[in-house]
Image: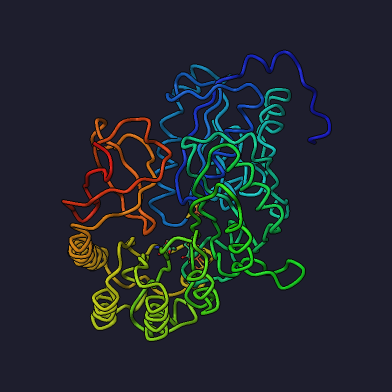
Length: 452
Ligand code: SAH
Ligand code: SF4
Ligand code: F3S
């Protein structure tokens, strides 16, 4: 189908695109890469759907709520599409991969459904719709995603994400990701290094390596390559100041990797390693492959070697069969570890996963109460931990104007705290020292050191 595409002058008419992304950081990066490709084709990005020739949603399937949101956004476009049938409406990403053809049935005004491994062909797919006037379904799972990063559209010059592996082979019992993102495929060290070098030459100071299950980076590559090897290679890049990586899985996180982190000066003291639950019984039914005790030992080891390491986690409340006692064990884990921050989700059954076969027997009311309890507990812990930062000098990479107060600047510490302070715009992109004098549970507030 793709070979028969003819480039015509007609396509020049379709040059504005509106793009909205749902879901995780990896999805956001895919959106950034897709926008880069479209920009190279001459598309201009607009921030209102009704000003666009092409409207694209990059979607998420991780919880029902994420899907409902996209379907409601799509539904809202029906009228616009009726008035302007020439507009192209496209659904990309995880929900496109999962629902495929069914999206056309439910939303007949959708023109394009493009899965998680096909977005690099977006310009061709849009052209095909223009030339043939028919729906296009592109959800081939076996494609290798290969996007030349040099064209990527980047909001922040000084900070960048790099996808180092795609897919997940873990099959946690509740999770849809392995079904929509396919099997794990790692990029070679040389490939990642080339991309990082290009970003650094373009002013980037901090990279965050992305993978759904990043600790198994290297699986399938020749020569026993590990995430530690990749970090060591990137640590040698001149001009690069900071390296982060997400998301870690406790069962795949090796002590060797923790030792490597402690040794490499550019790798930040920050670990996002979701525990999901504090109950061994629930962890087993989630197929997570570790116990709460194992998790705690791993964190103790990391804190021994990297004393200021900040640890972040995800939790799911209301997994099938979760009793008050199970939940209490999660509360206990949270109190014991004292995370820097946590994302807490109510369990949402996903058709096709192992857990979908279990009765979703925790009521929504209980899920909501447990969610709230963990949120409040974490809020208190975050505030207390942040209070310990008062009077300390922290190194900040300045990102730009603060979202909450445009007269102030905002940046992040190596531990990933948000820091807000007064300063001039010429500091953006620089590493500076800030003295902290005030905090909330969400951010640190400070004054520049060594600046008038
Ligand atoms: N790969 C990452 C995260 C994947 S999805 C990891 O393994 O840590 C992000 C988070 O969504 C998960 O950590 C989990 O807490 C949550 N999540 C995944 N599936 C879910 C479901 N069915 N219901 C509720 N939360 C879910
Ligand atoms: Fe989902 Fe588990 Fe894979 Fe994370 S590790 S993406 S939670 S299956
Ligand atoms: Fe959602 Fe897909 Fe990410 S399901 S969490 S956007 S990998």
